[in-house]
Image (cartoon, rainbow, N blue to C red; front, side):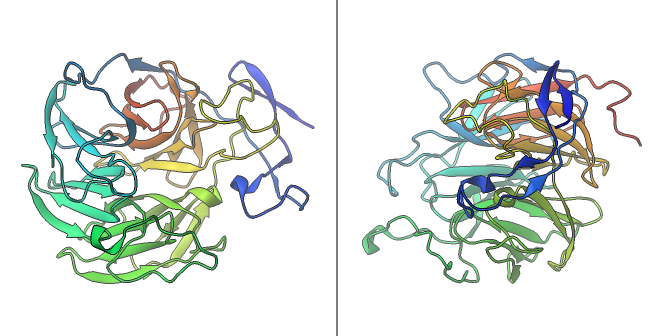
Length: 378
């Protein structure tokens, strides 16, 4: 078996066995072989304690981060924010910080749609979009923080609300409603695309007026099928990139939902690193490798894509839009410049990135110091 250098150490890298993300194949069933590669590490710095919370206040799990045109940072955190349960304690707060990390305000305090934070995005008009996995809702705020539109509807307490069942075969998705949605993006005409999500396995499309257009995708492993479509971004040419996390791949579609192509990130992990939560996969596994938790394309450019990996190996990747890996950023761990659960990325520039970590309960601001060999070509 061939050995490849990674991060100053050595890892086994060829013909490793996939573990199918903990489902779908038993331990005694044949496992697919994956050819692993290497990529250069991109030097970077992490700015310590960049975001300044008020005294006595802490983040919970941080699944969402976004930056608007003024450099304000929005953090969607799983902190208790309202009274009364959804299924368990309500866990969602949307916080805004200034360009220097100073705390500015809480948006939508004790909002009816808050239940379990999942992601936040900012559109080209600086409207704020929050995706709540627990209430099955996507909420659009104006830049002033006022609710403008709501998509989906939470279950009513009067009807005995309870968690969705993950039944097999899955129940059919319903137009205009969601089951644990995950992310949102917009094309050049302002059409809206929502990934949905943990129970449903589809992309939902609305037009710029918020009217339902169509959906595509079902549960599965084939082209145009999904297993936890977890993140979505759209480039300047209106290619739609969907982070198909459970299938460990990124699928690309046109705006009509037609499959164009796909790619996987198969950069060998360093098995000397350890998972922050739960067991570290055994040496030779590709469980979690390149599984796209988060996707981000810097605004006003069409050259690179950033991808945040699952909890372990926990890295961030800089990619060309064709999926070629330009470089690797960080590793699994609890310290600065280490990541666990890089659940969301905000990339206001190609070298300034905010990493929201669900497992480490924080947002890191990182600044890349790319060498000529890792910088993207223009």
